[in-house]
Length: 502
Image (cartoon, rainbow, N blue to C red; front, side, top):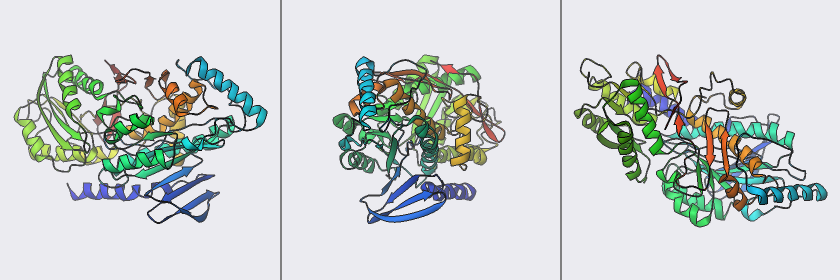
């Protein structure tokens, strides 16, 4: 890794550790815990008031918030949430799409609203699952250190931007109960992820999870505990195969087929090879099968497949092997560090699409739409396609939700690259949950069973961010089967307006 790139990544990782202290949000308290004691920092009109609170593990909570956070190709934190009426009936709301929780849930919600209005108190309070009359609890894990901290940082900050908007605008306007986020930094250790997920269920007693770094490690526990994870970005093949996980992105089988379909449409390729980046302990069998299926769907040849760690910084062996077969298209890693490592090897080997020494190569794909990738790979990566996105370009989209996204990110997370699909995903996760509870009619009747029922009958829901979400009882669960190409042009990633679908 060059000194410039290393320095840049170190700065980002260091900056990420301060993510929870950068906002000046009125009426939000941040609890940061360590192995001894944590401090509650109440932020009110710019003034800080601290007091001691006993805690037991590295983590934190955001009181009075509704948020999400996680990282693509890495894993990062937290919760996506919305609220229900606290002591007053839920204000009427509508959302595009069908679904809902069924007649029984709707009837129960109406009854709950009537009783809340009559008694001034909610009827669904249940501290055993984190539901209180004035708030409910949501949990998750994140990664805020190491090579993948940039993803955790962006996901968490974007989620906090949504929760700031929700708590200061939507909740007061619609008389909604608040949400509290409890999160832990698991340092991308799958065993820590599992341990913290168990803690969130057994000790913190949160209603549901909004994002964790290793669905692979926690999958079996989620099923046994009937503990929903709503809004996962798909960090493991198990993200789509578990009844209790509701992902927001197409599965690897769909996404990989889309990438090869795009490559064939744009470059008329007849062969490709893959350098697949992998998170810790993930079973890569489904990845291999997904690329094989992609080859069959587009009638092209998969020449080779090799793996690299998502935190890898040396791609020499993988790249040297891949180019021996002279594929017409190369799939590079998604994670920034691994992508840049492979592109350094490309420069060393004088390999580039239509290059003097590599005329056999028509194109390649890698990266995750972060500006840091372009800043450090150009001009080698000119014309390179990223993993793609399910979202429209937030810089140019004219939808109301994208307009609000731009405003809230500028206000609450000004240092975050708004084009990154991690940031968009975990901001829009809050919007999804807000509408899911409305569609399900369970704002005043929050239980895990009702939440699962609402999630399993959600959509199709046009998010306003360019994608549509449908969750149902079918597993494996495919929320959407479309995506948009994103390509390096000059000094930035450019979002394509053409949508590809399977």
